[in-house]
Image (cartoon, rainbow, N blue to C red; front, side, top):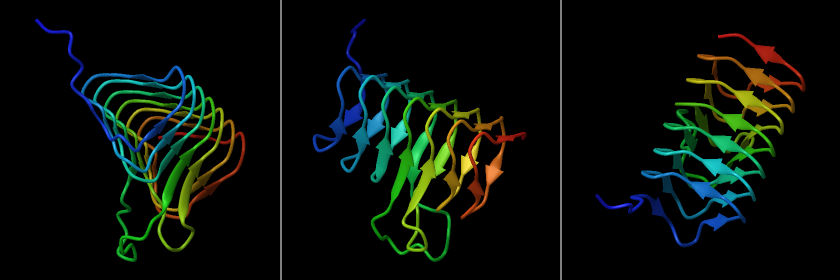
Amino acid sequence: MSNQILNSIHPDARIGKQVEIGPFTTIYGDVEIGDDTWIGPNVTIMDGARIGKNCRIFPGAVISGIPQDLKFQGEVTTAEIGDNTTIREYVTVNRGTKSKGKTVVGSNCLIQSYVHIAHDCAIGNNCILSGYVGLGGEVIIEDWAILGG
């Protein structure tokens, strides 16, 4: 049996030092990943993702998918995740639309399994979103908030 890791990492992706990327992960070209970040298997990181340092992203997560919003027309936008944030299994974080231009998850956050963060949301620092929280577009959550699913 081969030890070959079957993933797809675009050569234009900007990946920091000491980043570990698990098998079956796809990373698109317009992506930035900070130092010391761990990305588990079967993660998809799409164009516009800006991921900070020392983050942890678990299997099945999709970061910076295009918004599920009718006003989105293909514009270049981002999904930004701060330093030391953990994204658990099957979380989706959509990128912004022309309304705000970006979706932001702050630093030191815990985003638990099956959370959906829609376009143009702004999540502060030190927040916890427990399993199954679903945020519609343009939601603002201030620092230190805890949301139950």
